[in-house]
Image (cartoon, rainbow, N blue to C red):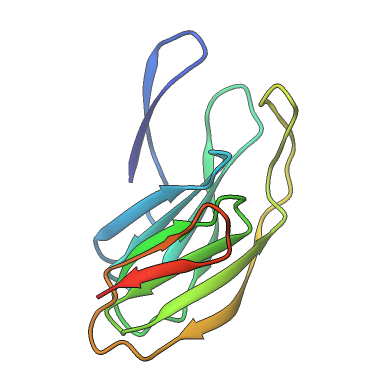
Length: 147
């Protein structure tokens, strides 16, 4: 995974993230704070990369979520970043509860860091085909998925 961004001094950077997937990456998504990146892969896993506290931008793979029986096609964070939904070719949607992780000061600077923990709180079955996408509503009351 290559990531590009604009630094504080308006210079662009490109950073290659640690390779943890065995197959093609299908989808990447930042959490709402922009401090955690999740990547979904055809290898059936989701990798979690967390921004490190340092003077330059550094990202570290801190977790790999497993459970899907085949390709993970899409991922989506809830609006407050406490839930991550994953879906895939195995006709399921997994809901992961996220705790810990980086915290930001009022100005948006990182002030502390604790690696995130993930726990699967639901596996939703019953689709007749691949689940290609999943999205949370901004209110967190509902989510939708599509075959």
